[in-house]
Structure formats: structure tokens, C-alpha cells
Length: 182
Image (cartoon, rainbow, N blue to C red; front, side, top):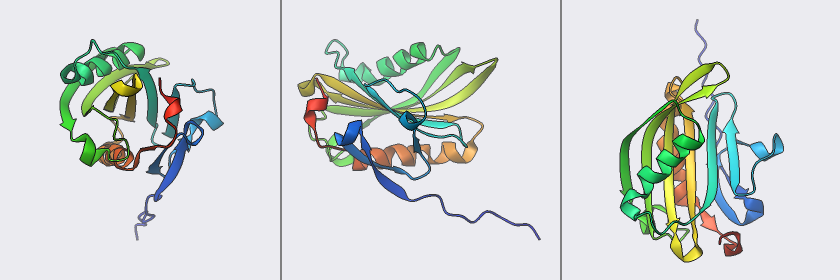
């Protein structure tokens, strides 16, 4: 008789980012990487080592010269350059209704979700990675918040649930300390 794994995935848990300045719900399987390795002050990194999946929150300076309509492509291409991607492509950019999909941050002037792929080198291997990038523009706070979920293309099940994870984060994201920005 075949045994199947019937364990339910860990329930979402409210997590603190930047020492509680921001909170949101994350899948319980994600671990805070700052407990394992140094993480830059402008980032929060959470990961599932078994799936090789990473969720990165990053605060960047707002660039008013980049139009909202171009922000998703600009940020994705900037991430590809920073990742030294061997190849990258954007599958879709969807503008999100900030008030409905990111209700906990009323200062968001524009938000979009970029779906794409990057081929990144890890050691001697080049890995195809599915990238979901949420861009939250906060011009009144002189910042933008980027939320990137990267999943190996080979991790089919994780790839299918990736958008659900990002939407959970967006739906539950709340800023408690605005001094974090600017």
C-alpha cells in the first residue's frame, strides 16, 4: 500500500518585519534568514530551505523619474541585473487595486504584480527561477516597498502556490512604524 503525505501545510502566522515596524502573515514554513546569516538593514529575507524558495522584502528609495506604468518592468529588470541573471523575461504585469488588495497601507499610490523568470547562477549551475515581484509605491514616504518571491521552476507545487503567498502578504501587510521609511 502506498503511503501519501497528508500533512497540511503550516498555517499562516503573523510575523514582524524590521523589529515590528511592519507586520504581515507568512506561511509557517518560512524561516527568518536573519537568524542564519547577515541580512542588509533595508531587507527582510524569509525562506523555505526545502523548496529553495525565498521571500524578500526590500525598502528602496522612491524614484519619481520612473512612471508608475513603468515601475514593474523597471524594478524587475533592476532585480535581474542585481541577481546577475543570465536571462530574464516578464510574463505579465498586473496593476493591483491598492485599497482592496493592500488595505493595510493606505499610503500606497500604485501597486503592481510582475510575473517573470530569471536564470541565475548558483555555483556551477544555472537555475531557472520563477519570480513574483510586488511593487508598492510610496512617494509620500520617499520609498517603495518591493516584495519578491523566488521559486525554482522545478518546484512545480510551490510555483503554483506562489501567487497565493504574495497575495496573502499583500492582504495582511500593515505598517505600524512609519519612521522606517524615508
